[in-house]
Length: 376
Image (cartoon, rainbow, N blue to C red; front, side, top):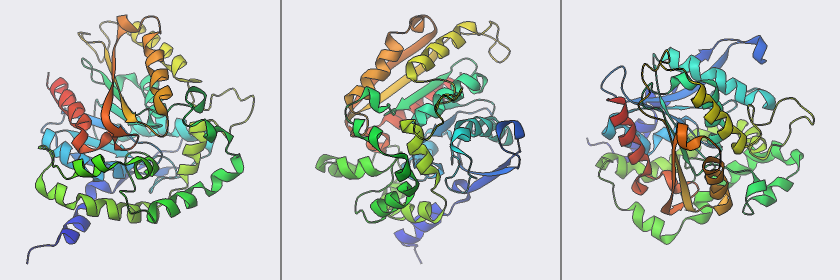
């Protein structure tokens, strides 16, 4: 008997590659006196132990299930390994205090890569995953490819101080954040639109256009027929999987985005190593300039750090101001041209959460670039 599409979807979502876990050792110095469970997805389609690996850092709701849609099919087609991790308080990953959130992430990354015997990765972030990506780059520079270091930002989050689009969010009182997971569940589980994309899912519901729906019917050449056929059912079932697990971390993610809930006068920035992206870019440039040559993990330096930014054409969360701010940080920082290969573009027909859709082609481009660079 031929399995139905529903059965194929359940089989797909139940695959062990989307439901892996490991134990992060305790680190009392970092506020974790006990070991902590971390859940992640590992879609390994690379053909060699040193093959191309993408560490995909999702937005607010973008944990390990970011890989469960067409990204899994794209990884299979392009022969790359895709690793997506649940941040603290999401999925099956343990919870931590808000102030420990980024530090815990910075502990997770090298421990997980060591656990998986992965020497190098390319980093791809979406939305507020950019905050984590910058911190990862500044703390664990050696995990990037030794000759072709690569990091990409998809629809990077921007603080409301840089965009009129999300400025109203800065007035949300701290007391409301505790209710955020329940509100999000109510919105997402009652929607008839694809509810969970790379980030919050809300932007895709609100800003989807008729052209988006028409384009979804066109299967990209690098997505196999079965993956495309079950895509609608995957979208329908993902909220069930996500909200059966922990989502309390989404409240902290919202606070982190808005720099809310942190002690006044604290020596630590809400975004950990930097106050905002302009400072982060300055730190990245200084770090690249200081790398010795030959570097222990980089016997030669034929390529600069490659940084790519992709902006949504209609971004309902950060607007044009967010894209302009990110560009300004890279384009006006002294030393960027010497040490960093930066470029950006706006992707036509996309919104904040839909920028990673397979039919838009951006994820495919990134995977092709990374596959070629790891092979050299």
